[in-house]
Image (cartoon, rainbow, N blue to C red; front, side):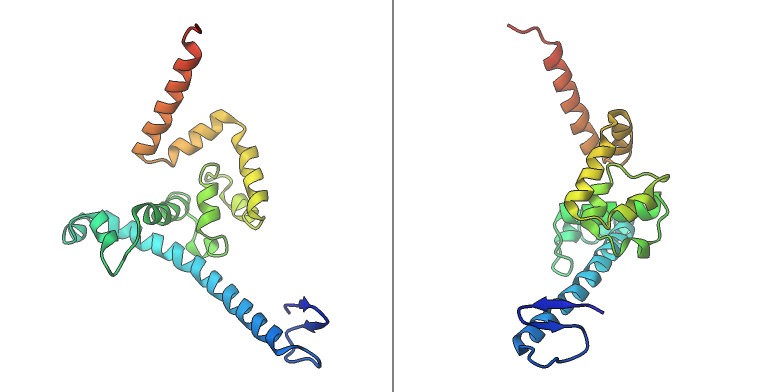
Length: 185
């Protein structure tokens, strides 16, 4: 049972307790409702990515909207491109490419899955899903540690990038290399 302490009273999930402030009970009820909504929201975003993945593949269907971006901007969808891309890409990477069942991703959520995309592969996907139980700062440390092997990180990250992202990364890398090779004056 969930236990929540606040001030001189305690809620232990057993109904009203003698001396418990009604405001504390209401606040706890709001907290529990929010937890439930967040859990449902994580599931809904994974499912949104799934549907976006299959809709984006159907070019004829999208033509009736004037293309994918117009479809996303339609009143009934109303999603920004970058948000839709993140949802679709997370579904595509984890479920399509790595073969993870969507239900295994529900507890993790889009934000952590998106962060982990740089380091996860078929051999360690479930290890990373388990690591996602960490707090965001601790997960960031794990990701940074995994990225320390530059060659492996570049191979994994490049495999998950779209053409524009890969082109941008390579352009930046070449610019940095040219700066190092340029004679100093």
